[in-house]
Length: 291
Image (cartoon, rainbow, N blue to C red; front, side, top):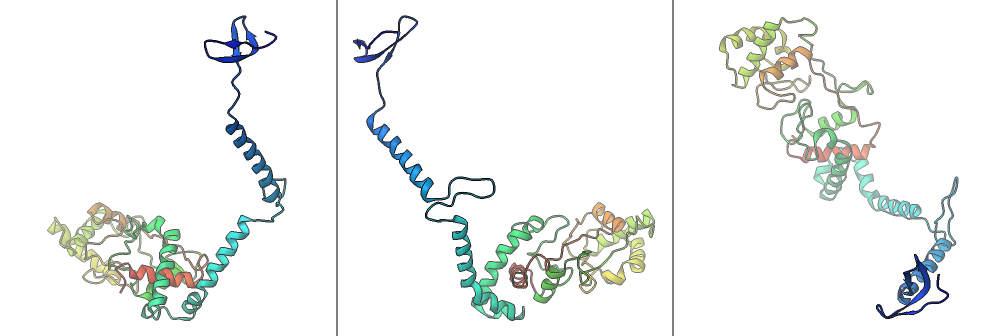
């Protein structure tokens, strides 16, 4: 190592005097002053921030800072302010009958906004973001309702759910498992499935449909109606239209007759307050299929 630096003519820079392997020298090129000033400013700012604001986590708490600032407290204040601003609308919805809400424009707009948010948080995973439904999950945009599509009916369905063990007032309709419980023979199930297809004009086997008509009359008509028109009081779907919850081809219909399906929707009254349920009801009703 050299005792002192020298001027390096090739680079026009002095060296530090450090030499490695006899010929590798270190040029003396310190950081620009502006860069150092920025670094020092950042260090000073970090120390000031550390003193003024919460910064260091501890075992069960954290340093509060001399200003006592809390982002959580700020958020809670904003939430409280938002709730206070909404209070008059929520109070009005709480006191109003569900049928009265659509008649008041301001209340309707508030209910629709809240209902849309509640739908996205709670219903969209099953029914879809656009309420278009999926196989086994009803489309809420059409006018085909198993349990009725007016405001009161929708509210009851949301509040108590369908075939839920968690609510004594749940919607309940149990279609027999005609195949699994050996109530009908396989040939009879295929024939009645063909007859169900004929109700919507899509049967391809007139003989099977004719045989299935008698089976339908004895086993299905009491719930679904003589012509497959359905019965909302019993939760029996319309079998004569082109809207199918579990699919409308013969294989799907045969599976439905065999197993009875029996989908479950949870009751939302334990999870959502009364005002939110009303808002959700109004929103679902507004999607286009409400009656």
